Amino acid sequence: MAPTKSKTRDGKVSQVIGAVVDVEFPPGDQPELFEALEVSTQSGRVVVLEVEGAIGDNVVRCIAMDATDGFRRGDKVVATGAPI
Image (tube, rainbow, N blue to C red; front, side, top):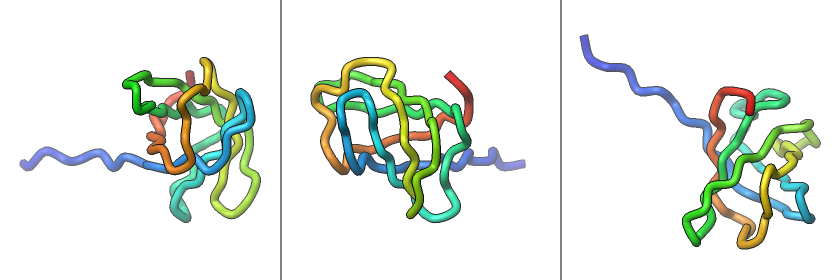
């Protein structure tokens, strides 16, 4: 039996205001409330975000668990499928 691939749900940063980060996902791929998301910055840092709510147009609003310095619109975000 062939191994199954787990489908990753990737989004992108659409807005950063301090510790608040909005992330856009493809339609139907939005993460659950309180799910952990991971953002890798260009400097190699991985920052965990927690989904706090859906704000429409496939965008979720998150709170960063660390500094958001270096985040840019369009940065890749990966949904972990688990809470923080």
